[in-house]
Image (cartoon, rainbow, N blue to C red; front, top):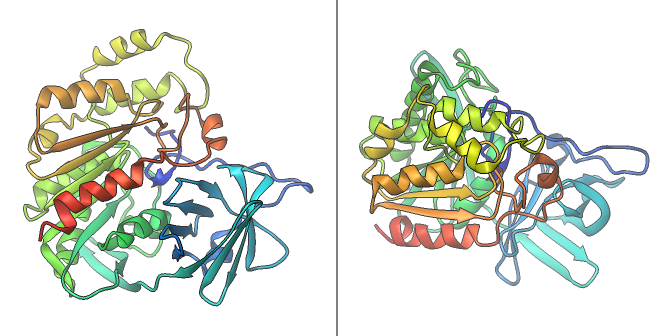
Length: 389
């Protein structure tokens, strides 16, 4: 868990949901360079195409098409408003498409089609949220439309996280009608306080849970937010943080846990250690590794906090996760027999990128996020959050 890939979504990791350091594409005279956050600052956000797809640009340098799951790295060109993407996540060439930004539009030109998408004008407000011994810098993204919106706080994984790490998730949730709060970890970015560190000690997780609860309390009082429909998104190590934060904020109405461990800290570290967090193929059989992990009973154990969850909870787990032992997590969740839990297993690694092995090298070759991820998340939100008010 301490050495694994920082995803996105990842999306994460979708989206920003992992831990450790980002892989970097090899750059040479023949290869374009990944676009920098500074270069993308003017263009990040969400765009709606004529076919209804939402295209999301993240300042970390990623392009995400919610329609077909394409999740690619953006590469710079000689023109500051022109970029390219390859056919795979971290492969710049051959180019799959050319992307041009102009006056609030994005034009995506592929070999067989050309799409123009219009920027979605969300309202974004920078705020400072008081927390114990710190003031945390945050941004609230309000969706369009009248009436009270549900709200969600995106909780970091183990990385030294700043709020822009989660541009992908902001775009996904705002497109579903949620107000989204993202924040810089204490002691990181524009937040004050002392950084608790990457290691998931009980003390650090307690601090992170306190901070997340403070964020949700702030968001629940934000004008235009329905305080009865606020919840959390937590990825990777954030999956340990969120259940603890739910205990601290009894008004929380739901939570989404992406690549989140139901195992103890030491069990999870043991599993990640077999592959160096996905750096190399394991030398032992899967069944033997799972047996060795199950024999460990030390480190912070999230079971009691998970058992205490009474609200709708969505788990997104990858079949080939080399950081979190998905098969063991599924066993744990099954024994808990929680009717409020919805568990979706995706053909992905830890970063929620489609990946047959879960290894980092195959993340680089992935065409994108699991195609079913956003549609299943949207349907779950409709059932449990957006139309529950």
